[in-house]
Image (cartoon, rainbow, N blue to C red):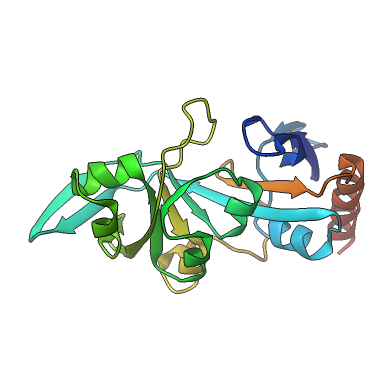
Length: 220
């Protein structure tokens, strides 16, 4: 397995030419590529790379959602365009507009950030400030609290996420059984990695690092 950089597709972001997606290629019995990476790669890349402004791990899901509000429960079957991220996502993709909150709220476990349209779908046409602190329950039992609201992204974006659950939610919930962050031998199309390079950093430098990381893992 070899990971490489692919120029990202959302060019409307500030300095979008510096944004890349990491993808995996395979040789041997099965040859091909996948726009996904092993779970440990984003953190390892963050630790080892130089000339990189931010590395974001994005774990996608389509959970059912339940909203308990005013003594009643509303259900929103999947798909609901969920991404599990930390604040690095918003360092890579810097043009999101925050109506309430900021990326630092994602340091906390069991919090979610919603786009404005999704917040209105869940809670009605209310002030966005009134949505902060409301509960959103994913897949029946993952209870989170709304900690931020984003303006809806541009219509031409390839990122359709409307629910952002904090990455720090994973260790203390059943999500921990879904992800093995020590396993280099598996990938899923739902596990993505994006990087924002510093101005002047050649992509070939990161490709070389990724190749060396793959060689190191093969020798272990």
